[in-house]
Length: 557
Image 1 (tube, rainbow, N blue to C red):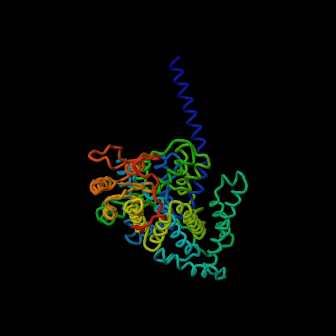
Image 2 (tube, helix red, strand yellow; image 1 turned 60 degrees about the horizontal axis):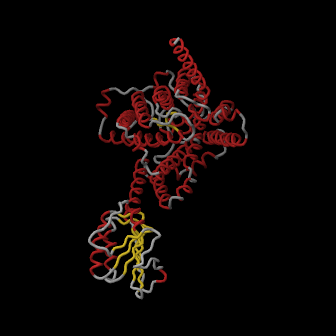
Image 3 (tube, rainbow, N blue to C red; image 1 turned 45 degrees about the vertical axis):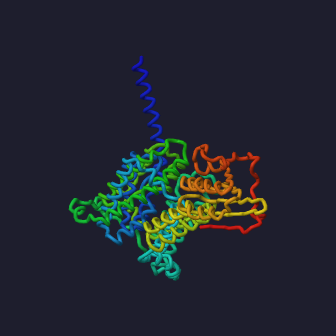
């Protein structure tokens, strides 16, 4: 009886799993339809053949999908890495790109095994948003030229400032000119995307939820280009599926490896890991199922990047658009990611001639639209809620990425964030007010009293008259460290010896310093007052600054 019951439970469990897997088939097809044009477009934006992007999408599905720590996240070539990939190819050549990607994968694997995934998420939001916006600007500017069948310029800044020239070329009216025809295809693609997304938001119709707008736009643009036999550039794929792979041999690794490549690999690992883990966090917020295991996800990404580097693919990350489509389409398990990779493989192997009908201008237009959405300068309104300094860091990151390169921009953003942190912990505003009639002095502290500001704090206390009753107000103080506390205690002994008196709000002091309350021995003249309670020996109402009879002193750093 027990055996029969166990067998029945196993059959029910197997049936439940089969039902779950079957439920992932339709979401996987929807994700595949979204991934197909994006994989090729990102490859073109990276400066490599479209086949490299498809290879990464296949590896991201077949390998990373089952290993993923985020069950519903989709991995593949990312727009966020297109810029740095193009820069690395220009600097080192396509032959060394695979080695850099392998190094990035190994770094991610080791970081995941060492349980360091959470550290890759320790990047300030202003820098992350600045990185994404900077990447969006570069993709938008670079692909704008490709959309009119022109070549992108040498740098992102030149791409940006030469957009008017691309507009002039694209609108030079003549169907015989490739620039104008390609521009019309690009504008048609973007228009269809905008209309589709507007209709999807307005009408709750199944076709808008199942069929991706990007696929619809690409199909229509491809049909128009084919019907009118336009003389524009189209996607090229190798005739033989096996020819798409560029395998790295041991001799190449031995001959190409250098410290510069290793550092570039570490930089790529950091950027890819940050984007992946932030995407995983966003995906977790979209569903109520299994939560992300970040270390497992990082190891899965590392394994995928090692394979992609060895076989000639692009570097991969977890990608938000495809992951979001997977969740909204009803994906339940890792099977949807695996199946989307399988559909990419079958399509790439048996239907390459269909891909070759797609105009490059249509794929570039898709990325122009993606870049514009990724830039998302509206995020500055959200950042401003946390202070204007966050907006400045964001703008500095964006500007540095556009003017220099991605890694430099991110490092500048992080350096500014660290500088802001140091400023916060060294910034102490000191205001003093004296009432000679009542022989009272009030000191108001605001900010952080740390060893960095100790000399200024000590200088302010030294100006206090020896026999006055000093009230130190800590209401606006965020933090006070041990060095400043000890300095106040030492100064208090000297002040008492001169006939003075010191009053400090102990409750505020305890909250600011985190130091447990402790009775002070050797002196009973320093009064630690509980919040809201007064003492009969001293005055409890702070002296307003505007009513002070003597000169107000303000120090600010």
